[in-house]
Each structure stands twice: as C-alpha cells, then as structure tokens.
Amino acid sequence: MTKRLFSFLICVAFLFMSIFSFTAKNIFFPAQESNVLSSQYTKTISLYYPRGTIYDRNGIPFTNRNDENSFGLPILQTDITQVAYYVTGELIYEENNTTSDGCYGANGLQLAYNEILNGGSPVKIVAEVDADGNLLGENYVHVVNDHYNEGGNISITLDFVWQKFVEEKLKDICEEREYKGACVLLTEISTGKIIVMASYGDYMNKTLLSYQPGSVMKIITAAAALENGIVTPQTEYECVSSVNVGNQTKYCSDKTVHGKISFAQAFADSCNCCFYETAKKLCVANPDGTYSSKALDLAVQWGFNIYGENMHKEFELDYDGHYSFVPDVLYNELNIFNAALGQGDIQASPYIINKITAAIANGGKIIKPYIVESVKDPAGNDLLEIDHEEFDLGLSDSTVKALIDMMILCEENGTASHNDSDVYGGFGGKTGTAENLEGAPSHSWFTGFFPAENPEYALTVFIEEGGGASGNAVYLFDQTAHLINDMNAM
Ligand SMILES: [Zn+2]
Image (cartoon, rainbow, N blue to C red):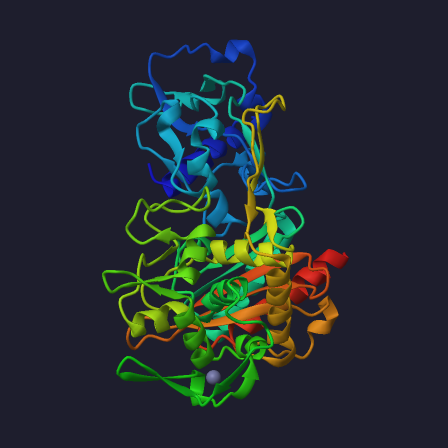
C-alpha cells in the first residue's frame, strides 16, 4: 500500500467515525463490548501502525507529531516536508501485510532502529458490512487488536527548532542561488553532539554522501607537514602562480601570484603551488616505484578508508556504498598534486570533515560526533547502552594550535575574508572548491568553527556544483552562523 493510499484510507476511516459521532478516543480505546462483531461480513477500512517516537534534545517529537487534521491521532507517515526527514528517515507500508512487519523504516533512524521503533502488530479499523458491502451503521465500526504501543522511543541530539530554521534558510539560499543541492552540519564541540544535520536537493542526506573535498584536504596535508617537522607556520615559500607537475603546468586558483608568503598564509590563501611542494616532501618512495604519503596515512588514521580495502562506515547512518576514502599509494607527480589538493581518487563526506574540524577546534580530541542520545522502552527504561567513542587526532598541541591559527587567518586575511562575522565572534576554517565531472561546475565547501576564540560549534557546509567556495560555501556558512547565533541568544 502506498503512503498516499494509506493516508487516504485513514481519512476515509475518520470520515466514517465523524459521521457516526465517534471521537478518536472512543475508537482507539473502545469499550470492551464494541469489539464483538455481530455481522458475518467485515471489511478492514484501514490499519494504524503504532511506532515509537524520535525526540529532539528538548523532548520535542520529530515523528508521531500530532496534526490537527488527523482527528487526534499522531501522523505516522514521514515525508520530505517533515523537519529532519533526512535523519529520521522514511517509513514504508507494505500492501496486504497486516503483521508487525507491514510498516518499516527505509532509511535513516527509522531503518537503523527499525526493530526498536516497531510498535507491534497494527491496529485494525474494521467495519461490518452487509452482503453488498454497504456499511451497516454507526455501531458497526470497530477497532480490532488495539494495544499499547510496544515500540521503543529514541532521543537524539538534534534541536528541532534550530533544525527547522536552518532547513528553511538552506532551502531559501539554494532556491535563490539555484544550487542543485547543499547541506549543513553543526556539531557542539564540547560534547560531540550533532545539533543540526540539514540537507537539501534530493532524497539523500548529503552530509553522509562523499565528494571530492578539494582544498579542504589541505587541512590534512598541513597537519601532516607540521607534525612531521617539514614546515612551521613561518616557513617561507615563493609562489609564482605555477608549478611543473610531471610534464604539466599547474596553477594556483585564477593563476594568482601569491609571491613570498609564509606557510600559514599559503594555507589561508589556499596556494596550490606551496601545497604541492609540501606534499612532495611528505611522500616516501616505495621499492616498486610508487609513493606512500604521510598525509594520506594521517587521513586513514582519522577515519578515511583506503580505496577498495574493506571500506567501513564512519557514522551509524552512513549509506551503504558511500564512503570517505583515499588511494593506497600514489603513482606519479600528478597523483601527488591531486592528493594534496583533494582531487582525483579522494572522497570525503561532510560528516568526516566536520569531525576533523571539531577535533581541531577542541584542541586535538573530541567525542566523535553522534546523534543518538538514548533508546528507551515506553516505560522509560534504557533499551540500549550507548557508548560515545572518543576521536583523537594524535597531533601535538603545537600542531593543533598552528592549525587553529591558520584557520582563523583564512577568515582574517585569506579565502574566507568576511565583513560582519564579528556578530558571532568571527570564525576559523578552510575553503574547498573541488573539481567535479568534466564540464560540471565545481563543488563548494567550507568547514570551520565559531566563535574564533573558545569555539563552541564546528560547522561544515557543502554545495553540490556550488562553484567557487569563497563566494558560495563561505556565504552559506556565514548565514548559518548568524542564524545559530540568533537562536542561541533566544
Ligand atoms: Zn600560490
């Protein structure tokens, strides 16, 4: 049975009920005797599947929300207009399946916690009919198999109100700027709680899909270079806008000549030439002629897969087949150039980039960003023990400090220069403009933290085919930070 048909039948059922002056309460908690059927012909008008509820951090329900048009019954169906739909997920109703398996989650939390949320066998709304199928009258509509919801309830870390407003803002910006799709991920640094996970564009949660990270990858290249003593933030480099990579000439963005700059400034300006030279020094030649890279090793240490080797999910709601990964080895100079710049055989989800950003902003380690806070039975007893994993960058304090300063420099005097971020205390971060398929516009990234001093939040935004990061992803980041700041003050 399709969801639309199911909704229609629920409406039909309630139309009957209202005609016969029943209230929803009578129907769902009927007197004992009304369960006794007198006619030999009955017809199931509809099924109501009880199901546990998914609550926000303040106890506001994302699912089973009461709707005034539903005659007092919670609406079970999920649809794309529902707040946090991408996180809670879709419910499927199976035609003719009147067992407890007739309703199940197709994705998101509804799928991941399907068994726990399942509320048992469906409540049947049955009408007695005559031999021609006509309803006999008001005393002949019954509820069969009414029972208390047997499903467990889930509390998650998202904030319903923040999520709702960020989703609206994201939609407005995407429509106004004609973006194909985009997403926003906000994590509270001190706790690892994901507060907002918003996506726009199609039916999948883009914070959990993977894309080429572009220059966001320079965070990892820089961390490896600093940690291995290859550079300091003050190391000077002379950028003439191009470098020879194998037999090709590669340029800095827009063929900018960055001139004589420090490594920190090269990070803030996203100088491709400096990062290529740095990445070469992180490579170790293998006997078979390939190269291993200390930057890619660090990426693997931080949760990236090695492409093709037992790829694992990074987050519990990750989709099958969508993983963050880096190549095992690099074959030539072009590979080294691409790896340093987050191009080629490298993909990252906004989730893993947010996790790394949050850990940097938190001084090197964090509770790995999570979303499920508790899972309880209807009586409030814990059904699952939830362990929150720690994520440690494994970097020295001086490297973490240098990364934070370089990310702040990116706003103060770099690719994310911005005018009015003082309202929320400024920010630190890194832009990424990532090559896409031939001819398609680039993907646009920004990952950062705010306020710049004593950061509270890690915020990662991604715009599919969004074009240059400075004018697009940074704008989305800034607009979101303003909104969060406003809501935080309320
Ligand atoms: Zn340059």
